[in-house]
Length: 320
Ligand code: AHR
Image (cartoon, helix red, strand yellow):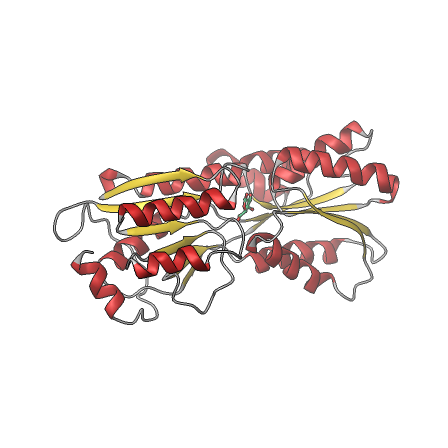
């Protein structure tokens, strides 16, 4: 265990240290900070951008030695990845938890080994615990609420809705649903169906095709909890001889370039951003934690919404 790690664990992780910026090339002793990063997988365009952002920020050039494991959409792989980082004795573990539950044992092992854990992207169901030091991510509940605010503002109360949900048990899916449901409640909308489509394009296409078979022309609006599922649904809607964006209006979350293109083309109607470019903030938190400086419990990225006009304005320079 390094001296800096001992200092961090001995002290209280106080709240806030303002913006954690600055770009050291190594720790105080001149050596690289070793980081084990367990990523959920490569299920979506958002995920690819998130991985690229972290890889770039946690580079050797920036003073890190990164061990990256793609868990291929399986929590057991992710748990094994964290365990392997504990065995190797890395300085800091970064974890993008696939689902909220099931982390206690392995994170307790990391704690016993005095290795701080930083969550990136999704959260776990141990928010008040000392099993992790900080989370860098987005406000999923707010994203769901923003999608619903657009529905409320643009839809007749008799509108019939279907929902493509993200991975069951993930904080992204749970919180987006909570935010969406809260805002549409009491407006009279009918939710015909809501099913897990795994945050993937293939899943979105398959589940939307099943919705269309079951509900046919009754479907008037689709809420897809990420862009990829919405883009897959567009294919299913067209295959059913309907016009996405017109016969069925669509709102999605992420704000990927592909979605902005579809928004401009009129096949999507509204897109809420979920910012995947979390690497620089994660690197700052890792550096602070490693050197014993206080960090905030959460760093939440700023998200925005897109209509066609906003999409056109940013498309040429949009980073993901
Ligand atoms: O946890 C963030 C979500 O996971 C993104 O919305 C989605 O695209 C990704 O797979």
